[in-house]
Image 1 (cartoon, one colour):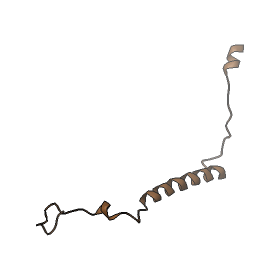
Image 2 (image 1 turned 135 degrees about the horizontal axis):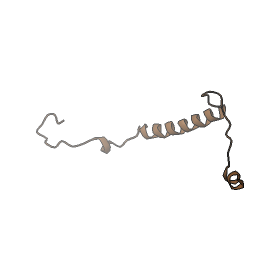
Image 3 (image 1 turned 180 degrees about the vertical axis):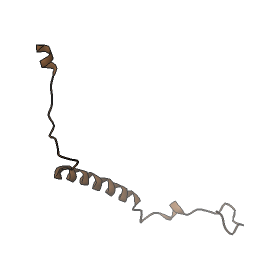
Image 4 (image 1 turned 90 degrees about the vertical axis):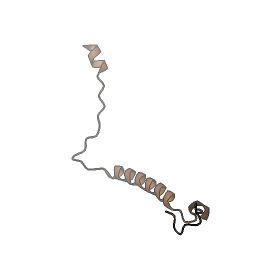
Length: 67
């Protein structure tokens, strides 16, 4: 019986009422979301792209339009 008591270790968590987030949890989530959105916006922000990246040469110069 003494062995059984030694192996039982219970960690108590703070139980919240309902499904609400604490102010601290909301701040952490908002900070993470801001970091992720800033990273995506930096990747999409491509204002000064060199022309060589999006210009191409005609494969057949006799054609009027190549798609």
